[in-house]
Structure formats: C-alpha cells, structure tokens
Length: 179
Image 1: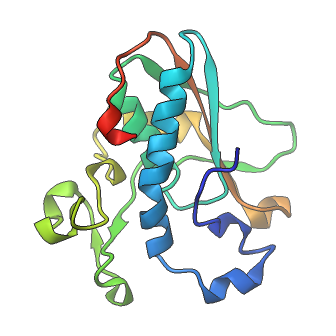
Image 2: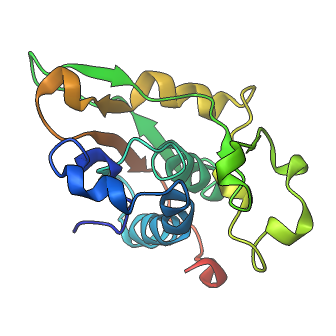
Image 3: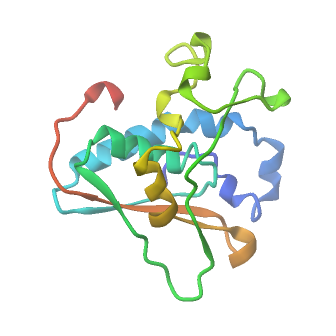
C-alpha cells in the first residue's frame, strides 16, 4: 500500500512537483497517515512486525506518525532497529523537529511544542494535532534516532524514504474516534 503523503521524497525524480509543493502538504497528510498506522497496528497480531514507510522526509509524516502511534499503544508496540542492505547509504531518524505554522508559512514561523499552538490552529478547527509534536526529553523520541532510517536521495541516487519497523507485543482495545 502506498500511504497518502506529500511525496516530497520524489521531488528529485519529479521536479515538476515543486510547482505545487507547500509546507502544508505534510501537515495535511499527517492525520491520514496516523490513522492508517493505528488501524494497521490494531489489526496486527501480537508478535507481528509492521514496516512503516513513507516517501517523504518531512518528520510530520514520518517520525511524528510513528512516535504518536507508539504513545497511543502505551508499550504494546515497540520500535526495532531497521536492518539495511550493505552499501545502502542511510541516515538515522530525527529525534527533534519543529512544526510549521499553517497560517504563516511564508513567514517561516514554527512551533516547538503543542503548548505554543493557539486554539484556532488546533484540530478540529485547525490542521495541527498534538501527535505532530515531539518532546526531546521523551525516551521514545530518542529511539527514533537509533532504530529508524532515512534514505537520502542525493546519497543513493534514488527517491527519499523513511522506514520504521514496529513489533506488537500485546493486543489493545481500539480507539475508533481516531480512525
């Protein structure tokens, strides 16, 4: 399945996408990606592994989705290190990021925490969600830097890709309001 994302990882291959690319594309796809990952993890049997990939290097579509799902499953899902092919040039996942202000993208205003987001930009009225943010002191966020990978297009003559492997240890009840 190819999840709905901004596809900014394909900009090198498809430069015509630059004309329609905006910072808002990653913000807009976050919730769909998050719901898809939650649903997939819910359907995964205990002991099962799930590979989450997205053709984007936007942490809102990549690391934030994985971190949000790990928090939602409260220990019933954990990250395991991604194994890579020999010779493949990858970088570790990010452990911190900022979230752009969708109302002022031309001014390059960013939020560092959910507490900084004004009520009018918060879902359901606005596009921003708490799952887009990372607390740099969170031990789960630190795992992103050691267990997830980013394939950078300029180092591998390919498209960009983010990958994370999650293992489910126990079944948890579904929270349907987020699907």
